[in-house]
Every structure is written in structure tokens, then in C-alpha cells.
Length: 599
Image (spheres, rainbow, N blue to C red):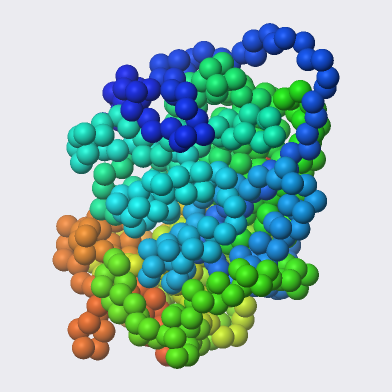
């Protein structure tokens, strides 16, 4: 069923079936009203002007990072950034300055680390439950552990979760057809100020890591629900402010702010972009912000509210630099407790991988190899190896998969999450920040044409000027492959001069569309024909251990590091033209308006 058909099918029953939190007792208007713009109805003159200084704090895209990590991009100096104990100290500092402070989490929280994976998110939840989060937009990776687990964690109103576009799949839950999994909105009351909080999750919930993991949920993809809910909040709930927490990513959220009047603030996640200099302000006056990844940044919007309206505002972008902020003792102690069973010491215990059944028997702070170059993927669009195109971390992992599978080509998906690893020791937990979703690694056989088509689709899905055609993530990483990329060329002609390394001769050869090549990448028992990005009709061979045991993707890389260092060849993708310049006053990683065909 297409998204539009799905939306029409559920809209008739949406108002009656949505479970709105106790803070929002009024019914939600059906999205059939979505074409109606909100309007402020005249109110009785007020005898005295009511003012409030309101502070909104935004965290997002934590991706399982409990402790600090190095920051190796050009805007850092290699210092340790992030860490939830340090972030909480900053949050409490800002709360002390203004008691009218609200904290929001904009998604992708309970995935991205060993602690998250092996506890199905519980380690992160137990820490963040102390933060006083009042609004949460679940990210696609927050649905990773399945429908039942998601409801168990967030179906109780935890963190004020809202998601207007995620529904129960009637094929799995016929008794819940048309119902959203979380409330589409909530009402927050703060000292007489009435705030409407609405939320969206990206439509890519079924891609993390695959539909098998989130069976039972479906999501619409165009934000069809937004105008109807804004209308409800403005004209029925009579709120003073509308805040949207959205995991649709900065590029799309800016478009929502441009298209739909009535949203005061959109707190955005998913793309890991940073509105580090200034928010994006749309033609409707909507303030849109995004705060990077891994808990390294915290956004602050100070609003001067007069008679329920924003009179003035100020934006501050904080770096969570552990050399300048002291960790909060209570949160630091809790994190230490949560990590105790994962790190070396008397408290360590084995854990079972929920996706592949492999048993974790090695403390995650064990050194498993050496990096000769910085490993990360986050460069801005005007720098060498822009993050949207390539990164050393992904190249290194693709090399490991290719080597350990004995394949012609190694593939690593173009995910945005990860971490930064400085030259020197690589710990097992670093690998889990890159390979956090329980894949195995397998080899199959593909044709040259399959590879070329996939690379073209990947480029279109990462840089299409219609951002609603993006498929999520960035360019995938490949080992044993290099090519030229002309993003200004027409679709089907962007990937040029593809070369394949001949494993026998050590020579680079032009890709032969008719030739067969062995290809290695992520693999799951639950999707046995899919290897990496491709579905193969040929036999699939998982990489096994010395005794035939199941190996998690991290274990495959550990085995590679026993005989290699992490020193990947760089610039495997040669950009023939620079990426477009940033459009909203902030450095960009992925061009926020895509790349238009020039010829």
C-alpha cells in the first residue's frame, strides 16, 4: 500500500482511535482537515501584559554514547566531547538560570553502542530517565528492537513521546487499524503558558535494520498529518505555542516549516547536521534547529513570551567539551554502574546478541587493534572526503569485510551514526559504535551491472534535489572499488569510471557489467538473500569462526585487526565537482537542498 493510500485509509478513523496523553484531553482532528490553515481567533483584551522567559533545550542523535569520545573533524581539536554525565551538568546549569526550562530529545537514542544493543536500549533509558525530558520524537533507530519492545519502552508516555505518522500495521494488529503507536501530540502547561507538542518519526523505521525487525508498524513519509494537527492545536486546543519534535532530518523539517504556517519551533534530528551558527528561520517564521550527534552538542533557544506570543528569541549552541565541564556525580555513577557488566573487572558478564545469538565474552574496553589514521565520517561538504561521500571509518570496515570473506568487493552501508577514533588503540566498544545492529557478514556473487545500478541508486538517494526522495544515510563504502562521481550529471550517469581491484593480479580493471564478482557485506538470518545493499539469487556464505560459530560483524573486524592495522586507502570516490555551498548559514555535511542536474 502506498503512503498516500495508507494515509487515506487511516484518516477516517484517526480522530477516534489516537491515544492522546492525559495532558491532551481533547480529541485529535482527523487529517482530512490538513488543507485548512490555522488561524488565531480574536481574544478578549488583556488587562495586563503577561511575560515569560522560556528556555527550550534540545538533545538528539545520542546513538548510544554514554561516555565522551574524541572529536576529530576540523571544528574540533581532538578533545573528548559528549558523555551524558557532562551533558546533564550543562543542562542543570542552564535550568538553574531559568526555572522555565523544557528539555526535548529528538530521537535516535537507544542504538549505536554495545550497551544499547545488548540491553535493547535499557542502559540508555535508565540513564536518561533522570534527565527530565518532556518531549521525545523517536528516531528510526529507536524502533530497532521490534514493535513489542518499542511499546514496552515508550508506550507508557516515557519522555513525552509523540509520533503522528507511525501506525499499527492492520495486517499484524487488525484490532488497532488506524491507530498511531504514540500520541500525535501532547499539551504542556507551564505557568499558564499552553504549549502544543507534536512529533514525527522518519518513515525509515522499517529499514533499521530491515522490515523483519519492526513488523507491526508502518509510517507515512510526507508529513501529511502535520497541517491537520497544527489546526487542531491552534483552533481547538487554543495553544499559545506549537513545538514540533521531528526525526525527519533538517532538510525536510525546513520544508515543513516553509510549507505549513503555525509551527513556532521545529527541533530536528536524523541528519546529524548542526545549526551551530544560527537556526534556520523559514518564511513562516518557524525556527528550525539540529544538534549533531553522539551527545556532543546541546541546543538552547531562549524565547521572550509576551501574551502567549514570541516577542524575541536568542539561540545558543553548546559544545559538551569534557575538558571544560565537570561530570554530574549522580549521572556519572549511574553510567559507571550500567557499564560495569560490559567492561573489564569483577562485574563483567557475558551477553547474548539479540539479533544473531552470538555471546559477548570480551569486555568492550579491550584493545583489539591499532588505527594509523583518524577513523570517523563527519567532514563538512566543502572539505576533503565530505562525510556524505566517504569516511575513513567506513572504508576501514569495508576493507575488513572484504578481507575476511575473501571477496572481490567489500560493502559497508552508508550510515550516519558512528564515532570518532583517534590514531592509536582501537577498543572493542569503538567497533560497536560502528556496527551496532547485530549483523553477520556474508559473501555472495553479483554482476557488474548490479553494482553499477546500486551505486547510481545510492547517489540519487543521497543527493536528489527532491529531499523526500532521499533513501537515508550517505554514499555506501566499498572496498576493492573506486570510481568518479559527478553529482551534477543526470540520473544513471553520475557514477563513472568504475574500477575493480583484481585480487589475483593486484591490478585495477574497468568494471565489466556482464562479469560476476564476489561481494561481502552485512547479512541477517532473517533476510537470507540480502547481502550488503543487494539481494542475490546466488548462494550466500556467512563468515564463520574457526569452530564454525556465528560471528557478529564486530568479531569479523576484530579478526581482521589481528593481522592488519586500520589504515584504509582514502579518496576512493573522486568527486568531479565540488558539492553545493551551504544554503542556510551553517556548514553542511549533506547538501540540504540536494544537488540539481546541471547538464
